[in-house]
Image 1 (cartoon, rainbow, N blue to C red):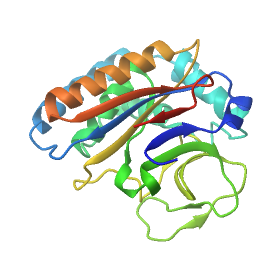
Image 2 (cartoon, one colour):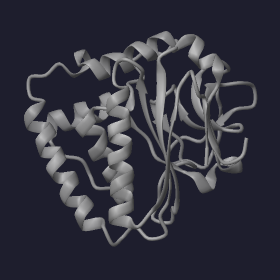
Image 3 (cartoon, rainbow, N blue to C red):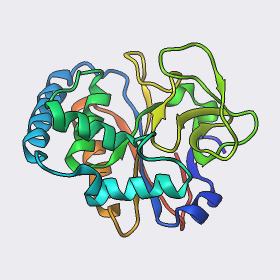
Length: 236
């Protein structure tokens, strides 16, 4: 389906509580708010660093839920650590992250504030402006970050995908090179993954805060959605 984000119904057979807050944003120019994002980003890094000392992150409500979901999908959460666990452990250890891009940095700040898995995809590189979460099938390909070569993805792996181009492998583990945000990106799809009854309230709060900042700071044109078992498609 064109201009959409969806979760295949089979996914809910394995993860019935899975949900995604979604932001579709058009941002022609993102440099004007770079300083504001940088300040927020640095403050959030320091807040998280100080407040997370001595915390067993994998035992927190949210990260425990992501780890459980990976296991249910047949993915080892220790070998293929979900994005928010990897991010939070890195900041817990050092309090430092490099600034990459204003939108990516803002996403990382929101991710740490709510302890949620937050992604960002260049929608211009998605087939038919659409991305889906489903189990991989024959013909699916993945381009690892920093390479120009596609590799075949084994069938049955939970992925983010656009037609047959996998955008994120092993659910919320690692993003593809062709979906990454660059200084030329103007069209964004931003998913915030969560689970009904665990952190869906935070997913909605984080989505709305992120969308509000994109509008206020960048003058973005934004639409938001929420995908779950009851409504598995967000059209934009």
